[in-house]
Length: 248
Image (cartoon, rainbow, N blue to C red; front, side):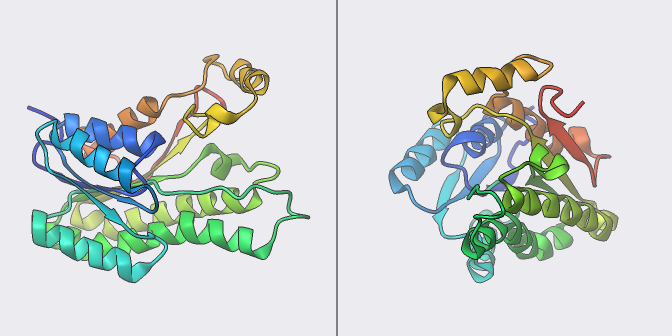
């Protein structure tokens, strides 16, 4: 039997990178996948088709997860169509890197709103359904930067550190209803976003990691699958790094 057979998963920001890898793996494991995106209709339609070809239902919703009402409307539609929500992966995120001295208020607010408030929005939107079911797994994508900070990323680090406090609080609030909430802190993951960086600099980063390589989106997706499934039934309120030993 597949690990997520007939379960319904919502994944935010899933048309590329880590989110796409999670959507693909969840579909392989039998989950019906609902995903959000903000811009690329072509990529969204292609992902829908790819997931449906795996024998599951898949549906993309185009909206900004920084908007609470939009999240609530989407959750209501999912319940209407799929009748339940078992898993939420809060993966949507952006960067607006700059040294604090040069960082604008807009750059700070935009990152906090997209990365942190969206986690509140989606969790709030699905909470009632999960409470009725007396089951659910919420997985929030943080970052090693949220654990240790990083020069030039005060806004991003603050948003990802905020996710950790939010995760632990939700785990305490909802644990009695068998709703689990955990966070993942990826390290240097090689995606199309990192593909545009200088290769010599990227190699330097790889060399500084104990496992001597960057992570793949699949490395993060595998942990997400574990946290989404009944294999982690007694795991909640945790922050797990996927970083090749970077923070060891």
